[in-house]
Structures are given as structure tokens and as C-alpha cells.
Image (cartoon, rainbow, N blue to C red; front, side, top):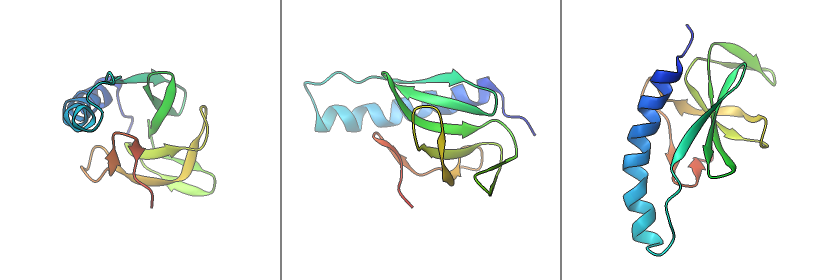
Length: 105
């Protein structure tokens, strides 16, 4: 199964609406930078400003020796690469995150 950009955009719109009030409550004077999508070959890179916020797998694949399913939410290991283990799946509703990015394991 291949995840479409529209499916990821729907999820991003929901989390932007969810996380913006929390951010503004904690940092009232700072301006919220919405999460946006940057496409790639195997991953959607989710950006917040100029930083990689997370990665979402486009399809089923192997990554650093671990099986990854379409829709898996990954913490960034660097600007161009996700970390090894998934932090839930956006399509199954199991993704764990805060305004700073995917949750630690």
C-alpha cells in the first residue's frame, strides 16, 4: 500500500490544529510555525520552519534493519534521514507526538 500526499496532508492539518493552542499557551509571544510536508522517494519529511519535525513512510520497506509500514511516524535522526524505530502509525491512530516532534520510545 502506498500512502498519498493528500492522506498525510489531512493528518498534518489535524495535528496543526491540535498542537497550535498548546504551543501558544506555553509560549504566548512566540509565533507558531505550522508543520508542512516535503516529499521524498521513500519518506514524507514533515517540516516545522526550517527543521525536520518527523518522517512518515510512504510504503512498506526496510529501514536500518527494521520493517517499516506505510504511515509509520519516525523521529528524525538527521535532516535527511529518520531514526530506526517507529513512533506509531498515522493511519492507525497510534502515532505519539508533541509540538516538539514524535515521542521518545
